[in-house]
Picture 1: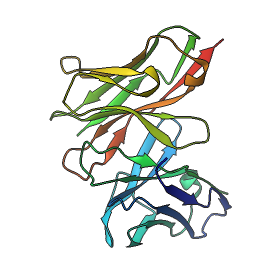
Picture 2: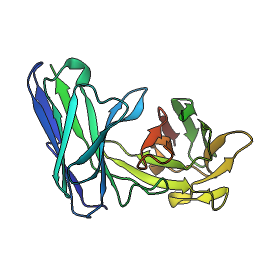
Picture 3: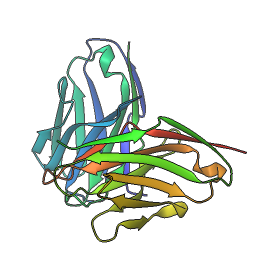
Picture 4: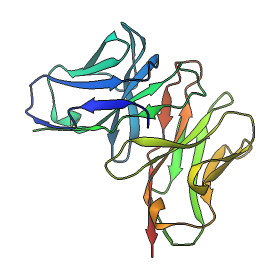
Length: 114
Length: 114
């Protein structure tokens, strides 16, 4: 298994509060991704990073921000959580971001916003 | 823009029967295609991928998929289903020249009846 951990694994929070999810890898892969998984939508890309301090938006980036200060850590922040952000969040990594690269996924974080 | 459509959100087969999960893609350039599997409460793991080397791709756990350009399809098959194959399956296409970002289909949940 790829060395990817996510924390917390479960979180319940209230509308309007800030939330930060952490992804940590031990593989020294350059690219890291945040997806959200919702029934009927598969996985959708929120943000991704192609190196330390280098990030870009994905398909559903509104309401989310990210930071990557070290190769191994990629943080996803919900500045002010809303009920529509209730979802399962997955982090993924890939070695070089090539189109043929396999992405390796973490175990996920289940977030509930009340 | 690239997109992926998985026909059938739920598929049920009997143990020992053929598994066929359908995936069609839309892409203006030759695509790279992936099948991932997600077991309950876990992250996604790669089953197989098409990277233009061969149109028939063999993956783990006895699964295979055939790339058919004329039909814009990449259907996943397994000759004989096993109870342990019960999971959710996702087809994905790689976004050309954009950091290996994946566009996922909505997923197909496979149930295997004894």
